[in-house]
Length: 85
Image: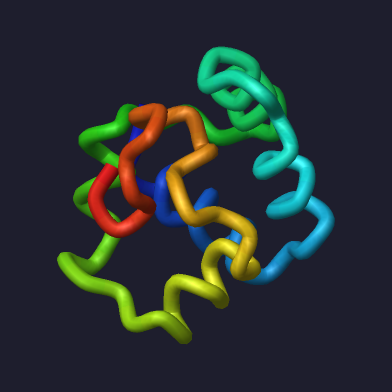
């Protein structure tokens, strides 16, 4: 597990619309974690949290999530906001 993987994951979510959509459509946190790990990313919730700014503007949040996530669907805290998982 690594911070580097968490950073790479966030970058891919930000820049790869198909990947972002695929992750966002997965129904459960467990399934999302499996998908993310199969995609080559291995990190903890804490590692991901450390890569996120304390606050994201609406524009930054939309660019990372594609405007698709009101609540976190990335597998790191069901029902948490994306700002702080």
